Image 1: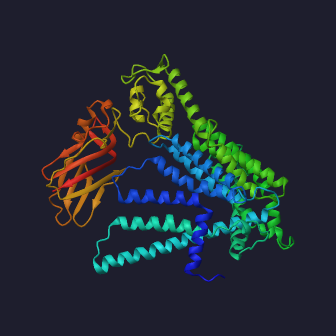
Image 2: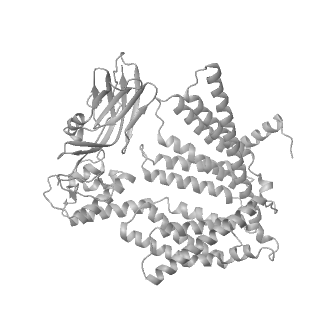
Image 3: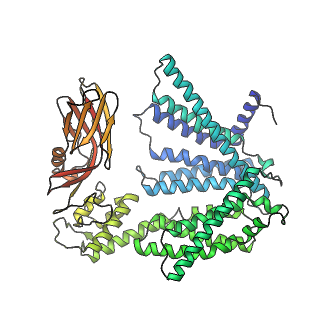
Length: 589
């Protein structure tokens, strides 16, 4: 064991700089963005900057490991720069405001590049042992780095807290956030990079099998997988006897079993290299688990197509279908090869994930195109389209049956939430960029839909009116005056009643109003009514969104309430309001 010294640490850092210069560039860039957002809160960092540096870390790491054996420095440098240029080109295609679909794609790309780092050095045949040993070492070193970073964070945080409590040093929250960046982004990553095996160690044809891995794989995971398989086979026999379709949720259970089984194979792989008579259980499991999985994969397929038939196409269901197909393929491959080349589990998974997530054939593009066309067909069938454009049916001139209305509302809500309303802009004459799904429903005359989750409660008489008011601070200067002593940030969601509580104030939401009381004297609360403001805002032209600051402000003798956004329902028959979400800034004298 090498003796720890300052010289050794300096040498390790120098090796990291020479071996992973581009990875360090992305790493330091990401840390700089964190520091900037923490300490310069008025600075707006564009989403593509975060994407470039965050995704670039795993991409550059995989590229560096791939090109380590390349002797031509010009080729090595050129391919590294090419990977950065391709990442820049991808980032350039991203919109200013990222939608959920983009976060899906970014997570998958990050996962693919991270998985690639495990196998890019071992694509050639006859290197299963080096692949296993490298993967084991990398995972263990990452966990060790994470533990060290956590200990460092807790220790330094406690030291700072002691300064605050013992010496009354004024410590801002930003100090802890900066410390978190230093520990979790910089220290963890750099320490991890220093412990990635080099080119010589990566290709050694020997392995070490820690006892804890044997216990984890042989005595913990294998019994759990056996129990899991037994439960699923009992369920399979049950639905065959009853001759009924499987529950759609069975897809999740079979996926967990398949992925868990392959992960267990990877862990206990070295046991197969030892005396086969001593490890019969391991050999039987590795040889026949894929066969055991095939009937359950058929059950999973039936469950997937049932979900498609009942609820239609979504991103998640497409990925589950692709996972099902991959499980078929890798199970057959492992059975034919007797599970001798386990690295192809990781390689094939990364390739399938990448191919299904980029390009016009990707899950996202296919889902968007399919739902857009389906919405067009539904609008046409319900007579809501005229010359290819949606009519204004806010006065319910065209009656839409409840089944069609529910399907249209579900599709529009899904596509507007995940892809944005621009996906269906072609069906509308006026711009719907600033409209939410509820306002589109109202214009189509289908806001009577009462599908699950659409309205927060049952009602009698006229259906509730949905409202969503928000403002944009980008082009306004707000004069709050000099008389206000406190600023309280408020946020309400769902049925939350207590909005703020400390030693000075208590702020509650009661009866469509905000009540502010002194913690010591709760008998004289300040009441800020919201219902009247909401009713006034509902009279404004919706095309004037976002609302101006003055319109979204409630002034009182001892307070000023600046509403950032407020969402909910107005019940005309009872003249009542339900606020589902609200954020506001409360100034108190």
